[in-house]
Image 1: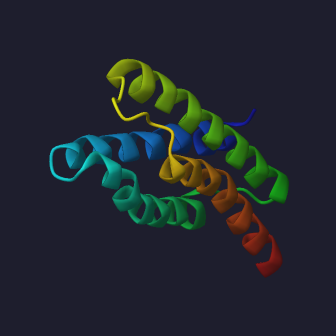
Image 2 (image 1 turned 135 degrees about the horizontal axis):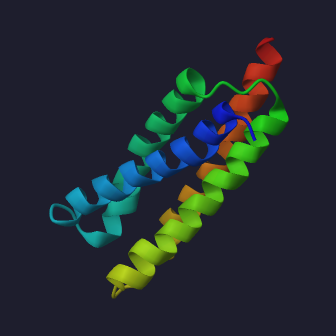
Length: 120
């Protein structure tokens, strides 16, 4: 695995998850729990698109498919251990906003990879 692929998959995947997690902790004391995900979604989408267009250097659709898979796995595993297991949310964590977040985590790299491929 080359250095750029490692940076794009594990590095950006973890950093994007950490940004969302940190923003969620900040919002925890300001907004109702049921709204945190819905507030984070547009912010996270914009940040993710910026990373995909400006920072990720993949040149093939397969590269972006790998990003989609690894970023989604990172999100699911870290959410499980650092939210579900560690924080034990009283109202159950897995709701529509979380499933939409996982879907976007998978779909956004594919859309950007397809778009970059079409442009070339």
